[in-house]
Length: 453
Image (cartoon, rainbow, N blue to C red; front, side):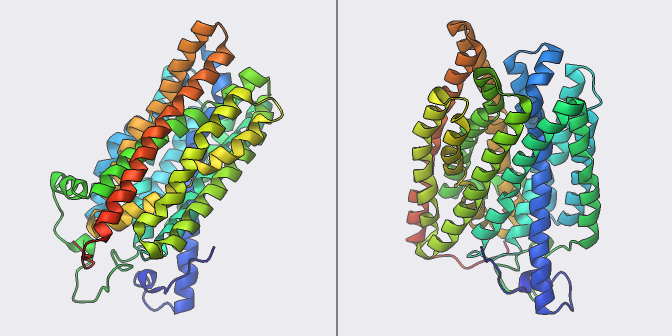
C-alpha cells in the first residue's frame, strides 16, 4: 500500500534534510510506531495464551481470569489516558514520552513473571496498564501530524498492523516458551526486548510540527502546542458537539466489548472444547488472528483511502457491512466448529470485525481540532477500554461460569457465553450507521477552513 506524500510535515522537525531523506524518515517513523504498538499488544495479550496455566496454579474462576486479562490492564490504562493526553495536547514531547513508557511497560511485563500470588500478578498487570496509558493518544497525534487527511487512513492502517503482529507473536511465542519453560519465563522473554526498542526510538525519532499536515505552518503562525491550552471540560464539550465523534465513541466501545470478549476466550475454548495443547493453540490461533488482523487493518485503511473522495461517510460502509456478516460467522465457528475446522472458520469473521479500526481512528483525528487530537484519541480509548476491553473478558468469563453451572459442562458454558457476546455487535452496527448519517449531514454543509484551534 503506497501512502507516500510530500515530506513537508515531517521535514519541519529536521531542518536541512533533503526531500528524499524526509520521506524515508517518515516511513521509518511510522514503521517504528507500528513496531512499538505490536510490543504493546504482545505484552497485553500474552496472558490470553497463558491463562489456563495461571488458572490451574492459582485455582481461579473464569471471572478472575477475565479481570486479569482485561480489567487489570484497562483500569489504570483508562484512568491515566486522559491526563497524559492533555499533557500531550499542551505540547509534551511525544517521542520522549513514547520511549519512556515503552521501556516501563516492558519491564512491568517481565515483573509479572516474577510474581507468586494472584494479587501480585494482578498489581503487576495494573502497572503494565499504567505505563501503556499514554501510547495510543500520543501515537495517533504523531501520525495525524505526519499525514494529511487523504493519506491518514492508510497510515493508520499500517499503524494498526501492530495489533495482529503483537497478537500473533504473543500467542505463538508465549505458547511455545510457556510449554518448554513455564508461563513465568514466557512473560520475561517477551517483556525485556521492549527496553531495547525504546532506546532506539529515543535515538532516531523526531517530533513533527503540530498541524503541519493540515495547514501551512509559517514562522509567523504558532504551532498548535503553543496556543493557550483549552480547559478539560471545554475540550470535552467541543468534541462532544461533533455528532459523528460521539457515535464513533459508542460504536467503538460496543464493538470492542464484543470482539475482545470473544477473542480473549478463544484459546480456552480451543483447549477445553477441542482438547488442543497450548502450543497448538498458540501457533494456530496466533497465525489466524495475525492473518485476520493484517488483512483487516490493510483492507480497512485501503478502502477508506480509496472511498474518501466520495466523502468521509463512505469510509465506513464496508466496515459496517463486515460487522453484519461477522455475527453469524462467529456463531457458526463457536457452536459448530470441530478441532480441525474451528480455526479456519474464525478467519473470515475475525477479518471482517477489524475493518473498522483504521478508518475510525483516522475519522477521529480528522474530526477533532488539531490541538485536541490526543484528547480525542484518549476519550475514545477510555470508552473502548473501560466499557469494552476491560469488561468484555470479565462479562464473558462471568457468563461462562453461569452457563457452565446451568449446563453442567464448562466447555459448553463457554460456547454459549461467546455466542451471547456477539449481541453487542448489533449495538455497534447501529451506531456505525449513525456515524455514517452524521457525516453525510455534516458534509452537506459548507466545510470549515482548517484551523490550529
